[in-house]
Length: 449
Image (cartoon, rainbow, N blue to C red; front, top):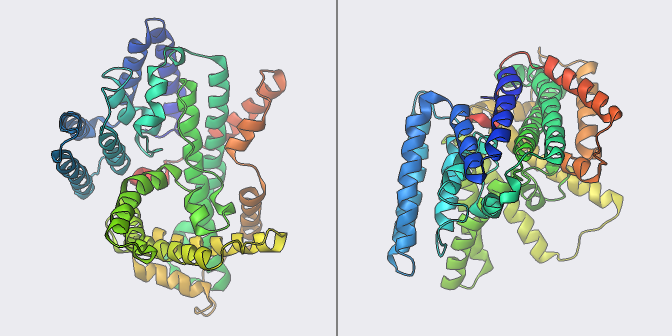
């Protein structure tokens, strides 16, 4: 089920909130159980056997990890558990209709298994694990949760109640995300889809228009989903981790990955890069050898999106960008100028790297990506498929929002959110505009992962 759908906004969410209000009056355990019921209803029923089998297997594996605490066997159990989840993710993707969000579910469960090392039984009771994985605001497309993100919240009886402040702040996030999705991301498909279907017909400006439109579509689509996920969770009193923080304002590729899909980056750094880097440093004390863990981590990041050549190349490109970034920082420590020209230059260079990689990320094959990139450097003469001045102004306006407007976290953090008629009318008008733009079946981009 998509957040940006009539069914979710007018049926599922009101019923979930109403039932939650009743459940909280019976205690935290009943409230948690109700959220699990809602999450079961949210996930497509046809894929529940696969998800139920995964939950059961990982619950047993988690207990096995705790039982082998302090013994060498624990590492072998963890290795087996991680391999089983990655294999299940690959197998699920090979199905004719892959279970939605299988990559996010697999990484959430791997993170939970890793967190079982040295951990007592989770605070909050037996419902913590299934709710960690299944909590519907993050179930399909993240953020990727670790136990530390929610364990203290779930164990706190104070959160299991409906609060006006949570409804208001969560509703603002939901509304902003809805507007990003319906008004900014979806319409860009009119430029992106024809461009990637006919890249050989694109001249210089249309090729750039297609690439820019895709980068903005991905930006507003994923940030819109992240806003809606965090907003919906907040309406139930749960604070999910921030997953998106103006990544196109980044001044380096390292900075970019600390702003884009932040929970994925944090997971890969803590679960993949750091253990490999520590093992490498113990073996040979040479920072040069850390390039191996870096490449392995980014290849996994690429293949996590799908086992295709473009995703592999996408991961390798970002590995190269990150390696160059780290080497430059090592050779030129403290060389970052803070004047406006230097800052703008770094932002433009970072965005250019991200833009090229995003073309490969979107293209179904390397041939399609190569054709579009060739058009961007002027190798196509003329071209039948052209964009008009209106499209150029549209993209310029979106760029202004991306680079000069505050992000949702900044808006929520610095706003004076007190109920009043002004905010009620403004929110009502914005919600009406977003709802009227819901037409079609535009899924979020990350639902395919």
